[in-house]
Structure formats: C-alpha cells, structure tokens
Image 1 (cartoon, helix red, strand yellow):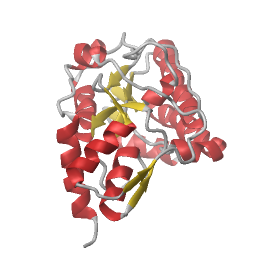
Image 2 (cartoon, rainbow, N blue to C red):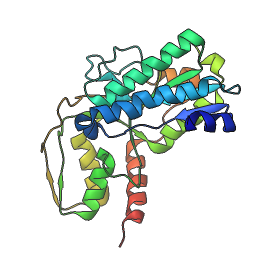
Image 3 (cartoon, rainbow, N blue to C red):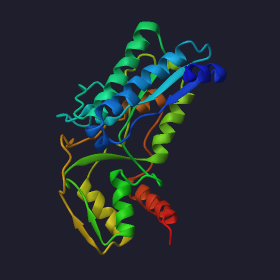
Image 4 (cartoon, one colour):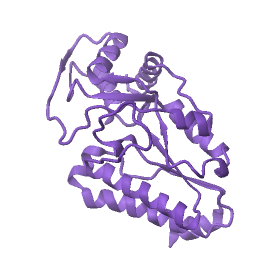
Length: 256
C-alpha cells in the first residue's frame, strides 16, 4: 500500500530495483525471509509500478549466482539457470516473474546479472573486501575454498552498467532476456588473496578451507557480449587497478 502510494506520488520514468537480502550465507538459514524480501518484494514492486503512467523501464538487479554450477564458460545469458542456494533461488524466481510480466503485459523489465562486484567500503562480508579488511587489521586471515574461481567486477563498472541501462531506450532492449555485467576473466580466490597480500604487504598467515559453504559454486566467469551489443557497455577496470583503489578506500575507513 505504502509502496503504491510512493510510486504514484513520484511517478518515475525509470525504476532500478536493487532491494534484496544480499547475503548468500544468511539465506541458508533464513530461506523464507529471503524469499519474502527478494521474490515477494519484487512482485510488490512490479505491481506498484504497473499502473505508473510514466514508466519507461524497470531495471532489476539479478545475479550471476542464478547460474549455479555450469559446464560451459564463459557463461552466456541463455545458459540454464541452476540456482543452488535460497538466495539464488529467490533471485531466479524474481527474474522469471519479471520476464513473465514482460511477455504477458509488455511490462518494461530489463534484467541485469552482475557477477562478483567488489569495491565496497562499508560491508566487509563479501570476499574481496573481507580479505582486504582482514589483512589490514588482523595477524591471520581465514578463508574458504582457494580453488573457487570468480569473475570480479569493479564497483564503478557495475554502476556504469546501470547508467547505460537507464540511458538506453526500452525498445532496443525488449528482445533481450537478460544482460551479464562481468569481465570475462576468472580469478581464483587464492590468486585474489595473493594479489591483495602483495599490494598490502601482509606478513601474516592465510588459513584456507575453513567451513566451506554448502553447495559452493566452483566457477563463475561471464560473457559480456550482450552488455556490449545492447548497452554499449564494457568493463574498464583491470583487477590490479580496482584492488589498489579498493584497498586505498578501505584504509581510509579504518579508524587509526
């Protein structure tokens, strides 16, 4: 009710729907809460926007986690969605629901699937930020599976994907099912930790393989052809540069 009222008052031409329960780990224990926020929340948001006379585009933040464990890399958007934890299951449901709305009533949904973004300064629960924060503040760092491979996308490139989606007319996006935002380059968590260790000059100890998450995804490497073709977007920040920037930013946030 409040949502409908707010949307009616604002009468937006573009909505970027980012709201979700964003922790994969948390979703294992809180599947219902996760579904209510991420899936039911998306239905509520879509319903609130449905009657908005101005609406040109509804941009939804889906996720690379929707792909689960694939066999063919880099992963294209038409790969089967194989979500293997509650966080991704709810995101796939929302992704499918918005596609259904697009096909049934012409709802202007644009589905973006960002891969592993890094560059946050407030939240240290994501892997890159966690390694950086811990290496800056602790004598030893405890990490999961060193062999897991991720496609690491710098935050500025991620945000630029949304900007491009806002600027692109829905007419030219109508026929695309989803758009990956990624770099097409896989980095193992071991390699990531070593790069960060080198930049920070961390002299402490790294302890691996503690409490591997159930149903861990082994490899996520995306293909960004759709982003280039439909949004004229390309990743611009190489990993070493992005890590140096992130380390700099996090250093400034840590009380001396």
